[in-house]
Picture 1 (tube, rainbow, N blue to C red):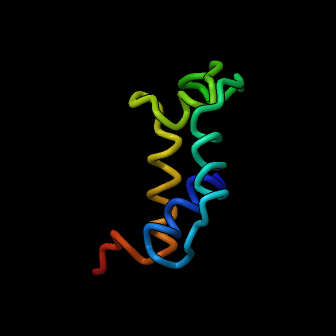
Picture 2 (cartoon, rainbow, N blue to C red; picture 1 turned 90 degrees about the vertical axis):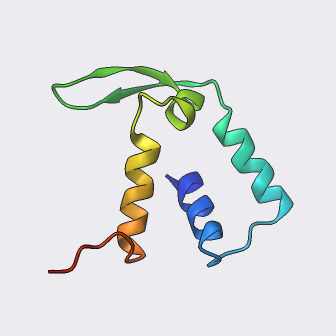
Length: 79
């Protein structure tokens, strides 16, 4: 979540990431450590961290991005 948050904050020009931070984000996105995820009754399985960031069938990055957009007041439908 921290990686996605930093990327989103930089995209919004709220923070500026230095080269060390950008390098760490790249390392984070490409880790091959395996972690177990549980999506309730629908699906539970192991993923590499790289898959969680890059696999189109996994919505963790998308969900986090949408949550941050909501925090920033984007994509809000007003009645």
